[in-house]
Image 1 (tube, helix red, strand yellow):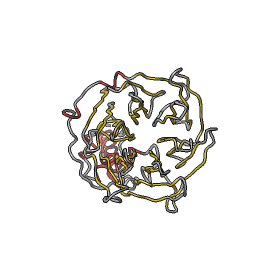
Image 2 (tube, one colour; image 1 turned 180 degrees about the vertical axis):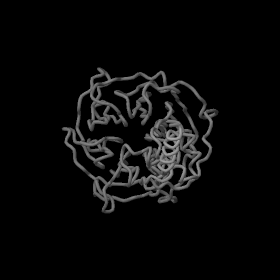
Image 3 (cartoon, rainbow, N blue to C red; image 1 turned 45 degrees about the vertical axis):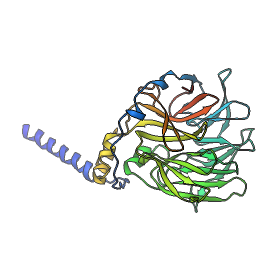
Image 4 (cartoon, rainbow, N blue to C red; image 1 turned 30 degrees about the vertical axis):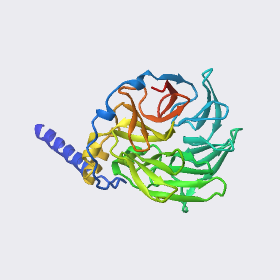
Length: 352
């Protein structure tokens, strides 16, 4: 009996090892080098300033990823059920504004009053004042626009928007990061002419997008590389790209312009030591992908404000937020409004 039990154990172990080593998966990791994550000290020193934020709850859905303000002074945000809501900050009353039929992420109002939305499932959308939805872009170079994420709009009517991955869809972020997929891009769409161009390719999970104060450059977050890039649009450096921020202490999500020539960056979760350690070892990451429950992350929220020289002006943190994954930080009239991938509401606080 003991011999049979031992043989069964050995067989189970052999099958487990075979599964971890050889079971076919779609993941094709590439080798890369991750710098050691910076310590939360100095300009990134630990604090709990974000914990003071007021939570404005609503019952229309979860996951207000990005925030925009309309000419009516109301706050607009998109939820994981496809709803875009309008929130009256004076009364706290929220109402349905539109239904995209997808998952609205980044958004901003255009000069004509339409709300331009990056929908991770449907592409680049325009939402009219009556809630009607028009698809602006759902194809890029003859293929489906796969994962529109964040955007900003220039005064000339050009929408700069990110495509996180041409292969992985929303909900597969952890898989894409484990592979270190580098098929993300930054696109530009002219609202007037309808022209679509791609201005930066080869990004590992392109995310947040924001123009600088004079619109001479546009920033895009590369979540999978812990970086923010700056692409020059005007002047002698027009058409060139550079790393603006490198080796951030967390995964950069949405970007928003702040007062003056500053940039707000939402770092929703901290770096993962295991992911960084295994960056040079594709085979080990394939083994990791076969293990259940490998998409977990620590709760931590960081909002950074940096100037045009990449100097940190404000570092606001919550070491244990009630809802994980801060996604956006929007500055307006001396206050901050913050979105979150899971919360049934938005956060509001006076600008420290």
